[in-house]
Image (cartoon, rainbow, N blue to C red; front, side, top):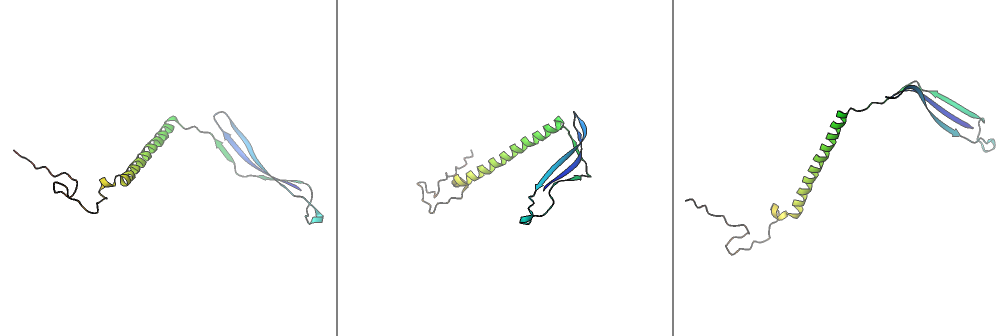
Length: 132
């Protein structure tokens, strides 16, 4: 037994070159072997079932104006620049934390050793202001 299910949809097509009323269709097929001895019953034949859709599809072609394309392009480029700037800033921050912890002040020596000038760290002594 062969069964064919045909669906037909009315369609209006509007482009810059053509305007037409047409139909779209889809076909689904099903095949079944009928063998009464094996318990498969049915009528042998070719059956076609039509489904005519009550809804209409309208296809319209519209082009985007150049100014709208340009605005969208500028938005994409600006988004790329801002995203890479943020990623660069985050990466720089992470590198400073990992590689430059001495400068950030998170590293403190276990004991302090006095230097020759009497200071306990490696900072320079304050200069005296000479006001004349």
